[in-house]
Image (cartoon, rainbow, N blue to C red; front, side, top):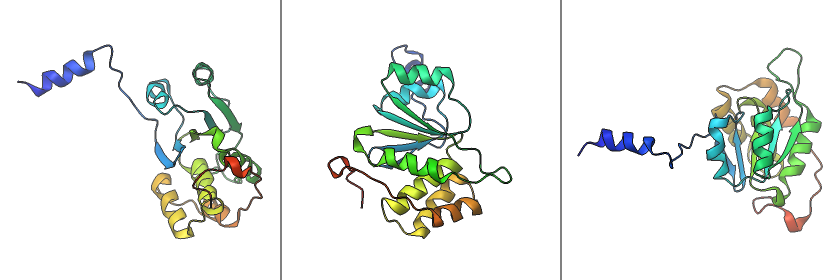
Length: 180
């Protein structure tokens, strides 16, 4: 018995699709995932999640292939325009973060994928704001999680999370179970 040939045969079978998650993919909490920008190779993996909503934080329009895939799978897309904050003199947009959190507090949008270009800084800020405002995490835990994905803390992002606040309105009937 050769394990190499049996493995090779598995990948040669046309009925088996290789499932490849997007860059920096992770589960945030029940019903919410985060990642970098999905590519067509990631679509079979994402289809397994049965997504209802995608929140995209980015300065560029989504590629047509992503829009077509989302439409085919009945996935709503919310695009909140945010520039790359690593550029000089660019700051996080508090209105975009608050608007994205407004989508997150409605469980009818679940499962949700939060993504930006690489799934590091912009999504890290959104998740950090979510942890702070909606889940009441400690700053130490928020910043540790941010650093795991951002490969080092960006001082401006950490400061933004610390001072960010939003007055979110939600229907308690549709509030996520993890909301505190």
